[in-house]
Image 1 (cartoon, one colour):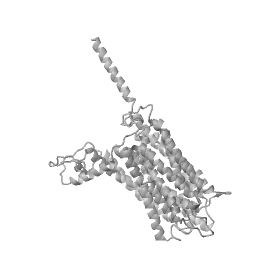
Image 2 (cartoon, one colour):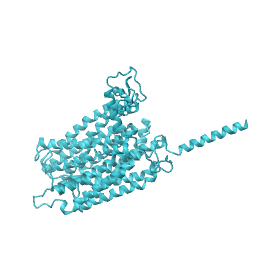
Image 3 (cartoon, one colour):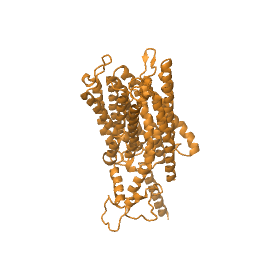
Length: 557
């Protein structure tokens, strides 16, 4: 009896040791730099995040060091009109958010997130160098104005400038969709404690973005307008180099998820198989393991059916149930995704017409002249203030009522962001109405009246952008996380393109010299009408978003 008891106790001890040993390693399928299961105490979690935060902070400082004041560079240095400059900036920014589809596809299907970030960082840096040269070498930039005659940029000058800008757009395409997902990969989804920390990670990830943006809105904008564009573009180039170095320094601490094949191919196989099997009849009770989550789109279930005549497995005619459910998830996300397009139209104004509005206001304090793009610092300052308050005060308070670890649901958080963005445009419209009246009666009003509209738009971003990042990361299939993140970013592209189309259409319909958005002097136009138009657009978007959010939640329940 004693020997049996001893053997039993030894077996229990061995099992206990095995369980403890398993808990030492991450169980979400990730590996360390050597391809082994990662030790939790030595890899991932918060210890890997400082390098990711530093990388994102420096990279965003470089990006916003260009984007925040690029419209001023086009108007002052390249001698373009307000409409032409706004169109160039919006098109470039839109491209910066469409290239992530390429980067995400490469990351999910072939290289993985780490290698994709590393390779595209080199492309990004080369674009920064080309842009700096275009502003520094005399033969690569237009000459100074002589009186009212301003020479336009020549074709070679434009070629160097736009090649630099669009190399940056390509480089950011490999970084932006992967960094947030790569950071979230550092937390084991199977560990409840790490899962809670992951929710906090997204808040501080967005915080690090805006630390870089804050420096760009203040220091870099001032340098560009007071010390020259050569130094103003050189500083972001240096910070892009620091971003790349920071990312590599953290390599031994990272956890890596292996690529799992092309998600686009998997999705196309489902659509083709469903079409080829469209004549097959679905059973009356057609249940799949995830059908409760992805109710609807039953026609896609035919992709997982096979006829009696078929004996050879063809992935373009017979797909797995998992593949079918992945496509259903993407289709159900579409209405939520589309709401971000209008939000991006509103948000893009802080880089274009908000800046031009500020340029028409009183900007001097004594002998110091405030660059209008500097007011963008209040957009980022609101983020730096709101994120800690949200993470440390609002979430614990709301948690008492909702019972959710992260306070609001991601959809509720996005809805709040949509509402606040409309408030920002409404404030901008009111300020512009008052500015126009005062400019015709007693003179310009101070630029600091723009602070509330920038602050509100920054707060809107904290709610909408962070909620969207977390929503798409958690709701998307494991094999499509980078791609779904890029897909979410695509709304920024479409929003910028749509904004450019709206600006062009308004300029054509209302007139170029005395319409809503005049070519030169905004005092001759009605920019407030344009802002009210965007308020109406955003107001229509909110109930549409609420409707589809309720449907999405009900179907999940």
